[in-house]
Amino acid sequence: MNSTFLKILFIASFSLLMVSNISAQNRKKTKKIDRVIAEGRRYIGTPYRYGGMSKSGIDCSGLIYNCYKTIDVTLPRTAKDQSKIGSSKTWDSIRPGDIVYFKFKQKGEKWYHAGMITYAEKDDIRFVHASTRSGVIESSLMDSYYMNNVKKFRRVIK
Image (cartoon, rainbow, N blue to C red):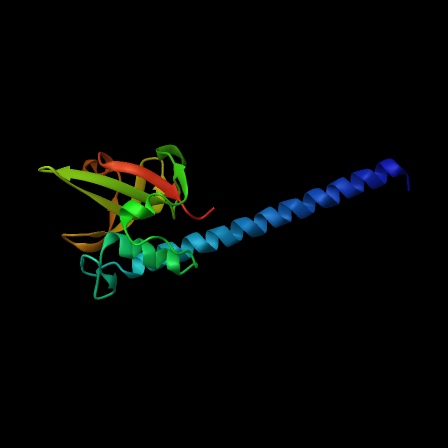
């Protein structure tokens, strides 16, 4: 065999190995995303309780904390502190598993809120969160109430 053929064979083999490795990493990432979303949806119907961390009552940051704990990611306990973790994302780059943070202001009072993106297509973005009124629900981020109060998006699952 000539050396050119061996070089081409080596490069082709190496490329195939790299593609295979990337595919395995993508499958692992997809499994993690599916797991955190499934965990978030398991809480749907759970009542809201400030500082809560269980199915008997949970707040927004407790929900995010518990979801990511299922994939061995420990986040801070408050939405404000959680919003400093991970990489920043834009409206155009969010995907399921990303975390959305809101900052609401009303009558001189402000508070932070967090939810996890469960579905993201061009005109339909949904997220699961613990609402003070309704408990854990899945909502549309396209609803003007939420859309107008988004502070940032963060990606924790790389």
